[in-house]
Length: 412
Image (cartoon, rainbow, N blue to C red; front, side):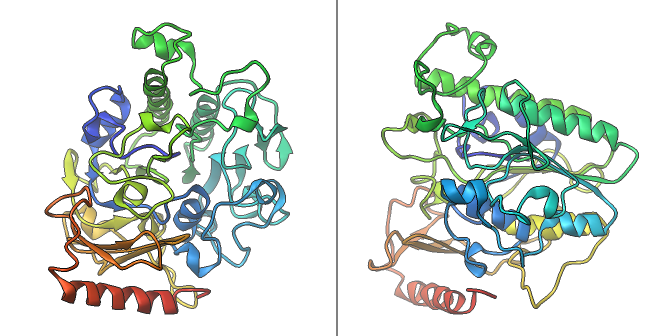
């Protein structure tokens, strides 16, 4: 399960005392909660491609956000890329995707043409939670056909997942559940007379004691996250036995002014989505796997969304794929059993932003024309004290590692 632009500090189990997230808080207690879990990219399209391929989007040229035309009919994720549901089908699993696709909708690009037996969701990166429109066009699909089911989209996607799990309960199954919540609504999806605001059923406002027509952005956002938490709770209740369940946010909250997004928080991290500061790429994440992962612990080891493909394949009884399509993910099972991460470093690039994370060090520059900045994350997670001048040897080492990665990664 993935959330859409959820802030690192937007859940109770990550220190938020204003937002009610009882189901995810309980989920964290039932498994392992990560404090150094990184997404593959600070934007939606590229981060989802990273998860499904186990590979950095720079390798296959999708290191950007799809525009409206590409969302509605472009190739998006290259067809040469093998993705997670294809591996799971080879292992005998029934597969389904419910929610946000955002990876292209040309023939051959759609979920049911890329390894998913079933799909119910939307093509685009964002849509109206109620009218299910994107840029004024209907954008809810079942398979490859338009679907006009009514309802609040996070609830629709959760209920579809629950129903699929019920139907496949006697079979091995794999569900990819990319919620479109709590992404802020698109101005182009708002009908005349409709307010541009966080979209949520009134019962969640009333649960907090707020008026049902409350227009306060902070209050509405709290209610949106609680509504998402409720939907996730229903899915978790439908899962039994030793099922592996993963939750994380596709990227950090967008700390961009003038879009209502200032009500979210990536605290204590710096900045947010579309940047390579910690708030853009380090995300809330947790795993529950009864009988394999001990419950109720916090893991500070450095892991990545790239690791989830080899983890799922291994959990399904398969082996990690090998070259000629090199993976950036490493099976994290030893870490989930209390071991150390096998990542020597993680590399990030989006637009002009670049970064390297290695052990406690973070090398970053928001523009390739600028000097590298160095941060000691063990001394402070907020990336507020640049120590590049004090540790020139570390800067040189990490910069050389980045340059080597950047020279070898593209199109491999």
